Amino acid sequence: MTDHLHLKAHSVQREDRADGSIILNAGFEHGPVAPNTGTWLHQWALATPDQILIAQRSGAGWQSETYASVLQKVRRIAGALLARGLGADTRIMILSGNGIDHALLSLAAQYVGIPSVPVAEQYSLIPAAHGRLKYIADLVRPQLVFASDGTAYADAIKLVGCDAVCTDPGVSNATSFADFMAGSEDGVDAAHALVNAGTVAKILMTSGSTSDPKGVLTTQGMMCTNQEQLAGCLPFLTTRPPILVDWLPWNHVFGGSHNFNMALANGGSLYIDDGKPMPAMFRRTLENLGKVSGTLSFNVPVGFAQLVQAMENDAALRQSYFSKLDMIFYAGASLPQDTWDALERMALDTCGRLPLITSSWGLTETAPAALLQYQPATCAGMVGVPVPGVQVKLIPDADNRCEVRVKGASIMTGYFENPVKTAEAFDEEGYFRTGDAMRFVDEDDPSQGLRFEGRISEEFKLQTGTWVHAATLRLATLAALTPWAQDVVITGAGRADLGVLIVPNMAHLTALDLQPAVDAGALTDPVMMAAIGEKLAIFSARATGSATRIARALVMADPPSMGAGEATAKGNINFAKLLSNRGDLLERLYSNDPATIVVDAK
Image (cartoon, rainbow, N blue to C red; front, side):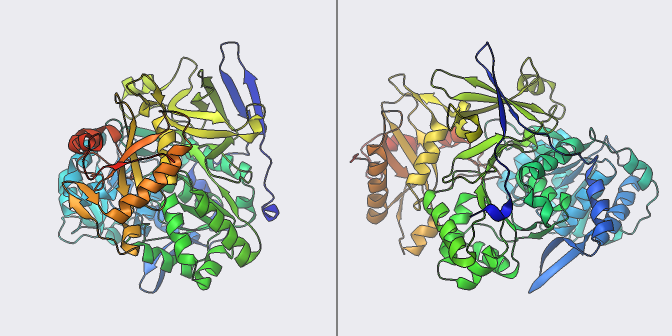
């Protein structure tokens, strides 16, 4: 039913080496790569000058900028940056989230070869996270800082300690962004002519879920190559301009490089969704999706689950969402099968055709898409085959899982001012060590692609010496606990059996009108605990041994704290830090505490 998309068949070349490693390549090459992002901007400003490139909510409607207006403003902003003495050896730090001025500044910096450093807005707006902001500022030493609201970001601007530009300067001693755009274009053409594949476009910070954040030197070549790789696998991107209604943050490679550039490279439009899949903000997302019909839909699984729930009894929303939709793309975790099935059912009922439901795999260091599932799948978890131009090196273990390493023009060459970590990141052949594990969907048919098996660093041993693949088990447990759990932390290192600390889905508890009691950091409610125990009993009954059987659970009252280092701005949990901070809950989990759910496998 996805025939209207004219999808390519997976194409893979496999080489089995004498040392046991496996090399995978795409069976075709990608097209010519643009030298820089400014090339895309010029291309579409000439071809479709009145096409909307970027839009944000303004009252009941949208404030928008066309390709022609963006190019004009980008050149003026670039001139202002050059007039301030900024260049390839200086950096602009962007504190606030997605917005038109953020986009214009980022594109202007890229246009003349000035690296920008977008950081999570939470680092500025949550005082407890200011330590992370200060760490990044000390690392990159910006010469200019941007924020949308000078009042809301005043403390963060002061902390960074350099000249500031703000859309609304407010109480900060900042230049108005409107005044900043009024400069001349002197030197802009000459500077733009020097921007090439090796020019650093952005320094993107890693999440810091296992160590201090590192700055990934993201070049023009990495970003432009990755878009050509994606277009080669997904030809429908080039047959009609993509339309996105997207909330994913631009400080992250997925939202800021993958999605933003997918619109820009293909002459499309990005409508900034100022909602999020959170109880207080998701209604805004639904409003935005009701106003604009997208061709591409990107989200995390919890976002799609909430969307499915909202669309069940809203025919107008279903029509707006599915009417033009070519692709549903999930990331961050595995999409629960009931959510997948509901999306397919609604699509067929609404439009009589299926969009491609898919995912890919990559990291900040890989620009990001290195593997992509570009053939229809029937269930979640498949991350596909190498995109053209990325060579994948697999190092199998005794269990036929494979450590993944990658090489190619879309892969970073190093971290910002960190030669030690850079050297550690690559093997003797120049492959980037991702730290992730994969498994072939079908050992005898590499074209079926790979399945994500988690982070190798998250594995641990039980008291018996049995290895636990915690990342894989976490995804399976999370799916089993739908809709009660928003996230889970697998426990059991050095213990006799496995347990799980649960981050509850508060929206689901609210929908059921449950108000659990708080018992020293744990939530207790007989209905909730019985339902979770029942789901875990069914899950554990299918376990193949102690390494996959959850024996106990406890529901945490407080979500992972960014200020305490338990969560990153992307929402990833730093498992080691959380378990260290919440040692009392961990001990209660392995006791006869009334808050502990003891699982009786059925």
